[in-house]
Image 1 (tube, rainbow, N blue to C red):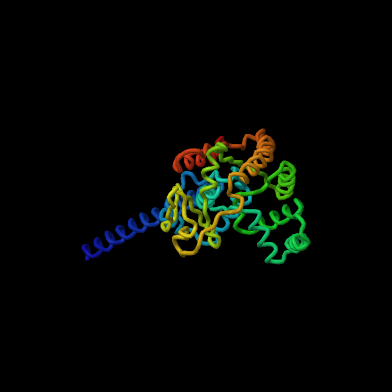
Image 2: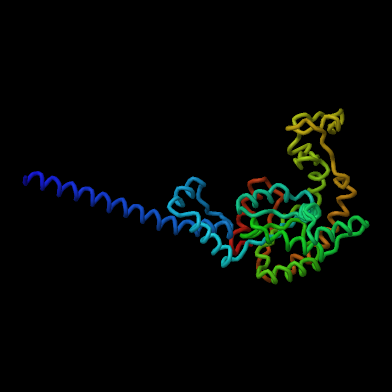
Length: 311
Protein backbone atom coordinates (compact mmCIF):
# COMPACT_ATOMS: atom_id res chain seq x y z
CA UNK A 1 0.00 0.00 0.00
CA UNK A 2 2.77 2.42 1.07
CA UNK A 3 4.82 1.45 -2.00
CA UNK A 4 1.84 2.08 -4.29
CA UNK A 5 1.27 5.50 -2.74
CA UNK A 6 4.96 6.34 -3.04
CA UNK A 7 4.99 5.21 -6.68
CA UNK A 8 1.95 7.31 -7.51
CA UNK A 9 3.44 10.36 -5.81
CA UNK A 10 6.75 9.92 -7.62
CA UNK A 11 4.95 9.51 -10.94
CA UNK A 12 2.95 12.68 -10.37
CA UNK A 13 6.16 14.57 -9.60
CA UNK A 14 7.78 13.32 -12.78
CA UNK A 15 4.76 14.28 -14.88
CA UNK A 16 4.46 17.66 -13.15
CA UNK A 17 8.14 18.47 -13.63
CA UNK A 18 7.99 17.37 -17.25
CA UNK A 19 4.91 19.51 -17.80
CA UNK A 20 6.60 22.50 -16.22
CA UNK A 21 9.67 22.04 -18.40
CA UNK A 22 7.50 21.69 -21.50
CA UNK A 23 5.49 24.79 -20.57
CA UNK A 24 8.70 26.70 -19.89
CA UNK A 25 10.14 25.63 -23.23
CA UNK A 26 6.92 26.66 -24.98
CA UNK A 27 6.92 30.06 -23.28
CA UNK A 28 10.57 30.58 -24.24
CA UNK A 29 9.75 29.64 -27.80
CA UNK A 30 6.83 32.05 -27.88
CA UNK A 31 8.94 34.84 -26.39
CA UNK A 32 11.71 34.17 -28.88
CA UNK A 33 9.24 34.20 -31.75
CA UNK A 34 7.75 37.48 -30.54
CA UNK A 35 11.28 38.90 -30.37
CA UNK A 36 12.33 37.61 -33.76
CA UNK A 37 9.27 38.42 -35.85
CA UNK A 38 9.47 42.20 -35.38
CA UNK A 39 13.17 42.00 -36.20
CA UNK A 40 12.30 40.09 -39.34
CA UNK A 41 9.82 42.79 -40.32
CA UNK A 42 12.28 45.54 -39.46
CA UNK A 43 15.05 43.76 -41.36
CA UNK A 44 12.87 43.86 -44.45
CA UNK A 45 12.40 47.61 -43.99
CA UNK A 46 15.90 48.59 -42.97
CA UNK A 47 17.79 46.40 -45.37
CA UNK A 48 17.72 42.87 -44.07
CA UNK A 49 21.50 42.77 -43.98
CA UNK A 50 21.62 40.52 -40.95
CA UNK A 51 18.72 38.31 -41.89
CA UNK A 52 18.33 34.72 -40.77
CA UNK A 53 17.75 31.80 -43.08
CA UNK A 54 14.20 31.08 -44.18
CA UNK A 55 14.19 27.83 -42.23
CA UNK A 56 15.15 29.66 -39.04
CA UNK A 57 12.42 32.22 -39.62
CA UNK A 58 9.82 29.51 -40.15
CA UNK A 59 10.86 27.57 -37.04
CA UNK A 60 10.90 30.59 -34.75
CA UNK A 61 7.55 31.92 -36.01
CA UNK A 62 5.67 28.63 -35.62
CA UNK A 63 4.27 29.56 -32.21
CA UNK A 64 2.51 32.67 -33.51
CA UNK A 65 -0.91 32.62 -35.07
CA UNK A 66 -1.45 34.13 -38.51
CA UNK A 67 -3.44 36.97 -36.95
CA UNK A 68 -0.60 37.86 -34.57
CA UNK A 69 1.93 37.79 -37.39
CA UNK A 70 -0.24 40.09 -39.50
CA UNK A 71 -0.72 42.47 -36.56
CA UNK A 72 3.04 42.74 -36.01
CA UNK A 73 3.64 43.18 -39.71
CA UNK A 74 1.00 45.91 -39.94
CA UNK A 75 2.49 47.69 -36.92
CA UNK A 76 5.94 47.86 -38.47
CA UNK A 77 4.49 48.85 -41.82
CA UNK A 78 2.64 51.68 -40.08
CA UNK A 79 5.25 52.99 -37.65
CA UNK A 80 8.59 52.10 -39.19
CA UNK A 81 9.83 54.34 -42.03
CA UNK A 82 9.28 52.79 -45.45
CA UNK A 83 12.41 52.02 -47.41
CA UNK A 84 11.92 54.22 -50.48
CA UNK A 85 14.92 54.08 -52.78
CA UNK A 86 15.93 55.70 -56.04
CA UNK A 87 18.48 53.81 -58.11
CA UNK A 88 20.57 55.90 -60.50
CA UNK A 89 23.19 54.92 -63.00
CA UNK A 90 24.11 55.65 -66.63
CA UNK A 91 23.20 53.11 -69.30
CA UNK A 92 25.35 50.03 -68.82
CA UNK A 93 26.20 50.76 -65.16
CA UNK A 94 24.49 47.61 -63.89
CA UNK A 95 21.05 48.73 -62.69
CA UNK A 96 19.52 45.74 -64.45
CA UNK A 97 21.91 43.43 -62.59
CA UNK A 98 21.90 44.85 -59.08
CA UNK A 99 18.36 46.27 -58.97
CA UNK A 100 16.72 42.81 -58.90
CA UNK A 101 19.23 41.66 -56.24
CA UNK A 102 18.26 44.58 -54.01
CA UNK A 103 14.61 43.80 -54.72
CA UNK A 104 15.02 40.17 -53.66
CA UNK A 105 17.02 40.97 -50.53
CA UNK A 106 14.72 43.69 -49.20
CA UNK A 107 11.51 42.04 -50.45
CA UNK A 108 10.36 45.33 -51.96
CA UNK A 109 9.46 45.80 -55.64
CA UNK A 110 11.60 47.60 -58.19
CA UNK A 111 9.26 49.95 -60.04
CA UNK A 112 10.01 50.93 -63.62
CA UNK A 113 8.05 53.92 -64.93
CA UNK A 114 7.64 52.20 -68.29
CA UNK A 115 6.21 49.05 -66.72
CA UNK A 116 3.91 51.05 -64.44
CA UNK A 117 2.66 53.12 -67.37
CA UNK A 118 1.87 50.06 -69.48
CA UNK A 119 0.15 48.35 -66.54
CA UNK A 120 -2.01 51.41 -65.81
CA UNK A 121 -3.04 51.69 -69.45
CA UNK A 122 -3.87 47.97 -69.61
CA UNK A 123 -5.87 48.16 -66.35
CA UNK A 124 -7.75 51.22 -67.67
CA UNK A 125 -7.33 53.12 -64.42
CA UNK A 126 -8.33 56.77 -64.36
CA UNK A 127 -4.72 57.89 -64.73
CA UNK A 128 -4.04 55.09 -67.23
CA UNK A 129 -6.85 56.31 -69.47
CA UNK A 130 -5.40 59.82 -69.41
CA UNK A 131 -1.99 58.45 -70.37
CA UNK A 132 -3.49 56.33 -73.16
CA UNK A 133 -5.26 59.36 -74.62
CA UNK A 134 -2.04 61.39 -74.64
CA UNK A 135 -0.02 58.60 -76.24
CA UNK A 136 -2.72 57.97 -78.84
CA UNK A 137 -2.51 61.63 -79.81
CA UNK A 138 1.26 61.28 -80.19
CA UNK A 139 2.08 63.43 -77.17
CA UNK A 140 4.44 62.94 -74.23
CA UNK A 141 2.97 61.80 -70.94
CA UNK A 142 3.13 64.70 -68.47
CA UNK A 143 4.87 64.59 -65.11
CA UNK A 144 1.48 64.91 -63.39
CA UNK A 145 0.24 61.73 -65.05
CA UNK A 146 3.42 59.82 -64.22
CA UNK A 147 3.21 60.97 -60.59
CA UNK A 148 -0.41 59.83 -60.50
CA UNK A 149 0.55 56.41 -61.82
CA UNK A 150 3.29 56.09 -59.19
CA UNK A 151 0.87 57.17 -56.45
CA UNK A 152 -1.60 54.44 -57.46
CA UNK A 153 1.13 51.80 -57.69
CA UNK A 154 2.77 52.45 -54.31
CA UNK A 155 -0.58 52.01 -52.56
CA UNK A 156 -0.60 48.33 -53.52
CA UNK A 157 0.18 45.75 -50.79
CA UNK A 158 3.63 44.78 -52.07
CA UNK A 159 4.82 48.37 -51.52
CA UNK A 160 3.85 48.33 -47.83
CA UNK A 161 7.46 48.21 -46.66
CA UNK A 162 8.83 50.33 -49.50
CA UNK A 163 9.91 50.21 -53.13
CA UNK A 164 12.75 51.00 -55.52
CA UNK A 165 12.25 53.60 -58.25
CA UNK A 166 14.13 52.96 -61.50
CA UNK A 167 13.96 55.52 -64.29
CA UNK A 168 12.25 58.20 -62.21
CA UNK A 169 12.80 60.98 -61.39
CA UNK A 170 14.75 62.05 -64.46
CA UNK A 171 14.72 65.79 -63.78
CA UNK A 172 14.89 68.07 -60.75
CA UNK A 173 11.29 69.15 -61.35
CA UNK A 174 10.17 65.50 -61.24
CA UNK A 175 12.18 64.94 -58.03
CA UNK A 176 10.41 67.83 -56.32
CA UNK A 177 7.00 66.62 -57.50
CA UNK A 178 7.84 63.14 -56.24
CA UNK A 179 8.78 64.61 -52.83
CA UNK A 180 5.46 66.46 -52.65
CA UNK A 181 3.48 63.36 -53.55
CA UNK A 182 5.31 61.20 -50.99
CA UNK A 183 4.82 63.89 -48.35
CA UNK A 184 1.07 63.69 -48.91
CA UNK A 185 1.36 59.94 -48.32
CA UNK A 186 3.31 60.51 -45.09
CA UNK A 187 6.54 59.20 -46.60
CA UNK A 188 9.80 60.41 -48.14
CA UNK A 189 12.79 59.17 -50.12
CA UNK A 190 15.08 57.34 -47.67
CA UNK A 191 18.00 56.30 -49.90
CA UNK A 192 19.49 57.36 -53.23
CA UNK A 193 22.13 55.06 -54.75
CA UNK A 194 24.14 55.99 -57.84
CA UNK A 195 26.16 53.37 -59.71
CA UNK A 196 29.19 55.18 -61.14
CA UNK A 197 31.16 54.04 -64.19
CA UNK A 198 33.55 56.15 -66.33
CA UNK A 199 32.06 57.10 -69.69
CA UNK A 200 34.89 55.47 -71.64
CA UNK A 201 34.19 52.12 -69.98
CA UNK A 202 30.47 52.32 -70.75
CA UNK A 203 31.02 52.31 -74.52
CA UNK A 204 32.43 48.79 -74.43
CA UNK A 205 29.65 47.62 -72.14
CA UNK A 206 26.83 49.15 -74.16
CA UNK A 207 27.99 48.43 -77.69
CA UNK A 208 28.58 44.76 -76.89
CA UNK A 209 25.13 44.25 -75.37
CA UNK A 210 22.50 41.99 -76.96
CA UNK A 211 19.06 41.25 -75.53
CA UNK A 212 16.28 38.70 -75.84
CA UNK A 213 13.28 40.94 -76.42
CA UNK A 214 10.55 38.71 -74.97
CA UNK A 215 12.24 37.88 -71.67
CA UNK A 216 14.59 40.83 -71.26
CA UNK A 217 17.58 38.50 -70.80
CA UNK A 218 20.77 40.37 -71.51
CA UNK A 219 24.01 39.10 -73.07
CA UNK A 220 27.37 40.67 -73.83
CA UNK A 221 29.82 39.62 -76.51
CA UNK A 222 32.74 39.87 -74.06
CA UNK A 223 31.38 39.40 -70.54
CA UNK A 224 28.37 37.11 -71.03
CA UNK A 225 28.16 35.79 -74.61
CA UNK A 226 25.37 33.42 -75.65
CA UNK A 227 26.46 29.81 -76.12
CA UNK A 228 25.68 30.04 -79.83
CA UNK A 229 27.91 33.04 -80.59
CA UNK A 230 30.35 32.75 -83.47
CA UNK A 231 32.82 35.38 -84.69
CA UNK A 232 33.95 36.45 -88.14
CA UNK A 233 37.55 36.86 -89.26
CA UNK A 234 37.85 40.25 -87.55
CA UNK A 235 36.61 38.97 -84.21
CA UNK A 236 33.16 40.51 -84.46
CA UNK A 237 30.08 38.43 -83.56
CA UNK A 238 28.10 37.04 -86.50
CA UNK A 239 24.54 38.42 -85.98
CA UNK A 240 22.85 35.23 -87.20
CA UNK A 241 24.66 33.23 -84.51
CA UNK A 242 23.36 35.38 -81.64
CA UNK A 243 20.48 33.41 -80.13
CA UNK A 244 18.96 33.09 -76.66
CA UNK A 245 20.39 30.25 -74.55
CA UNK A 246 16.98 29.16 -73.27
CA UNK A 247 14.67 29.53 -76.27
CA UNK A 248 17.04 29.58 -79.24
CA UNK A 249 15.27 32.71 -80.48
CA UNK A 250 17.20 35.52 -82.14
CA UNK A 251 18.80 38.21 -80.02
CA UNK A 252 18.76 41.89 -80.91
CA UNK A 253 20.66 45.08 -80.20
CA UNK A 254 18.78 48.18 -79.10
CA UNK A 255 18.88 50.98 -81.70
CA UNK A 256 20.44 53.31 -79.13
CA UNK A 257 23.15 50.84 -78.09
CA UNK A 258 25.64 52.46 -80.43
CA UNK A 259 28.67 54.66 -79.78
CA UNK A 260 27.10 57.76 -81.35
CA UNK A 261 23.81 57.36 -79.49
CA UNK A 262 25.64 56.69 -76.22
CA UNK A 263 27.36 60.09 -76.32
CA UNK A 264 23.97 61.84 -76.35
CA UNK A 265 22.49 59.53 -73.70
CA UNK A 266 25.39 60.13 -71.33
CA UNK A 267 25.27 63.89 -71.81
CA UNK A 268 21.58 63.82 -70.99
CA UNK A 269 22.09 61.55 -68.00
CA UNK A 270 24.83 63.65 -66.41
CA UNK A 271 23.01 66.91 -67.09
CA UNK A 272 19.78 65.69 -65.50
CA UNK A 273 21.09 63.48 -62.68
CA UNK A 274 23.66 65.76 -61.03
CA UNK A 275 21.02 68.33 -59.96
CA UNK A 276 18.85 65.54 -58.50
CA UNK A 277 21.75 64.15 -56.48
CA UNK A 278 22.53 67.66 -55.17
CA UNK A 279 18.85 68.02 -54.27
CA UNK A 280 18.91 64.93 -52.01
CA UNK A 281 22.49 65.29 -50.73
CA UNK A 282 21.68 67.62 -47.77
CA UNK A 283 19.54 64.85 -46.29
CA UNK A 284 22.56 62.55 -46.07
CA UNK A 285 20.78 59.84 -48.07
CA UNK A 286 22.91 59.80 -51.23
CA UNK A 287 25.43 56.97 -51.69
CA UNK A 288 27.91 56.55 -54.54
CA UNK A 289 28.92 53.05 -55.62
CA UNK A 290 31.97 52.28 -57.74
CA UNK A 291 30.41 50.05 -60.40
CA UNK A 292 33.66 49.85 -62.40
CA UNK A 293 34.87 46.69 -60.64
CA UNK A 294 33.99 43.02 -60.29
CA UNK A 295 30.42 42.00 -59.52
CA UNK A 296 31.22 41.00 -55.93
CA UNK A 297 32.94 44.29 -55.26
CA UNK A 298 30.01 46.28 -56.62
CA UNK A 299 27.51 44.27 -54.59
CA UNK A 300 29.60 44.73 -51.45
CA UNK A 301 29.47 48.50 -51.87
CA UNK A 302 25.73 48.35 -52.60
CA UNK A 303 25.19 46.48 -49.33
CA UNK A 304 27.19 49.08 -47.43
CA UNK A 305 25.15 51.84 -49.05
CA UNK A 306 21.89 50.19 -48.02
CA UNK A 307 22.77 50.14 -44.33
CA UNK A 308 21.25 52.91 -42.25
CA UNK A 309 23.68 55.80 -42.29
CA UNK A 310 25.60 54.20 -45.17
CA UNK A 311 27.07 56.65 -47.67
